[in-house]
Length: 185
Image (cartoon, rainbow, N blue to C red):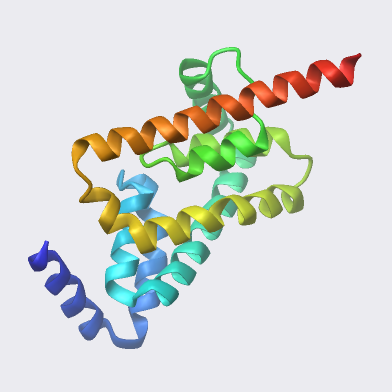
């Protein structure tokens, strides 16, 4: 890990004032080279520190969300691919905005799929970006600040953390079902 830290620091020193721009580009190409969000945010924390790394990660994630929205609207093949993925991963299930936001915190959950769910739940680009802005704040902060710590947890702590997130997801789902039943009556 020390070698990685030194490599990132050397790259940032050599990139100078262009380093934040390169980092944003990394966020934009991340899904196409199959890098997980958590890995890129960790790099942001190592390279720029907590505050600047969080801000840059947030901006990068917001830009990626906007791009995915327009790709889903403009490319029917991409839209079909996301629809098929949605049916394979969550067949016959409707997620709430809260569940999508919680899934954003979980490492290695498909970013584009969550954007697709959010797009289906919202009526306009403005509303989509509003919920994206709220839903991407916590992952940017958590992954940048604690990303390194989370990856260094012992395996049992990582599994415990994952189970806590899954339990929260299921509680939100149950709450939404109860609320829907009460609204119908």
